Amino acid sequence: MFTPEFGMFIAPGCNGIRGAVTMGFIALIAGYVYRFRWYAHAAVVAGAVLLGYVFNFARLCILVLYYIVALHVPSLRSKAEMGDYVIGACLFLLSTFLLFHVVRRLSESPGQIKPSSLTSSSSAGAVAGRSFYLRFAGMLALVLVSCYGVARGYVGTHSGSAAAQRKADQNAPGQFPERIGSYTLTRTWNENLFTGPLIYHWAEYAPADGGAHVSIGISPVMGSHDTLICHSARGEDPIWRDQLSMPTANGPIGFSGSFFNDGATQYLEATTICNSGSCGEYSSDRTHFGFVYSKPTSQSLLSQEAQRPIPILLKVETIDTTLPVEIARQQLTTDLRFFLGSVDLDGLTKPYRQ
Image (cartoon, rainbow, N blue to C red; front, side):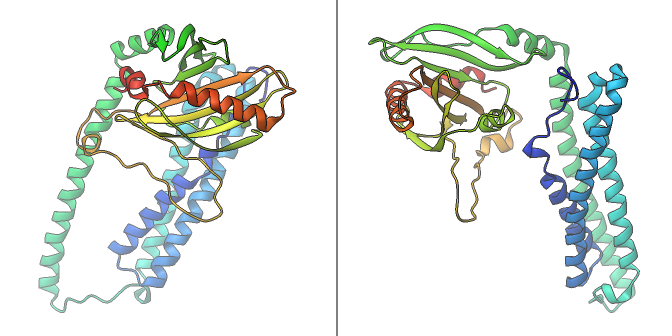
């Protein structure tokens, strides 16, 4: 924070992985097109990945300098987000030019290029011509399809009706049932950023026996989100975190659980993501390398009306901070499990999917 009101948060997603992977794929394709030998191809790809990381680091450094300048030029503060995009786009365009300069120089070295398997120059030219036009047609079709989707999404997002709807949704209450099992709705509220955009619709439910209240938040616009990042940004570290499997009205669902003590309360949080009628989230410490992926449905691949993922955050707390951590966590987990046994997450998230 440069001032109490003006600052920047460099999220873990700014680690340069996406830029490095993109540069690596560009080098991989360029090396194939220029018919590099395997060792030259591997060196170009490795150099491109490193170049992506270097230019991402340069992007972050220039962004910090931009914010320092914006301290003295207040009109730049409202353009800081676009400044990030412009700086990144210019730097990665420059890095792509540098990469292709190296590729062209290598292509001029006969020792780095595989010999052509075609002996006749005339037949080679004809085959290369047909191959070029086929590849060009395929690339053009891919670009046109991609541009259509991007243009359609941009127009839909920035149209007057969409902007008016987003503004109305910022203050509209969430849609929650009056009763969930033996729990009764006591209050609802919205959590918004100080600039206005909605983060969560919240509802608090009280059990009939006067036990611990359970709060449930649904985010219709945020997409996939790791709440632990927000806690870390506020300097809050979980005492415990692990995977939770909870029974719901739709069957068992995986949640990412974390337990906190802020000095005034002890509370358990459980998060999951619902998409296309199914819910689940995986988050756990691993001792071995592995992959966790989200399998898209055929409908989302072939349709322009893909359903967005809806994050769900549940919170149950106790004001008894003297209770041992393990006992408090077990009690709150039991309360949350009892509440979720009657929750239809598919029905709760259905109004927000489109």
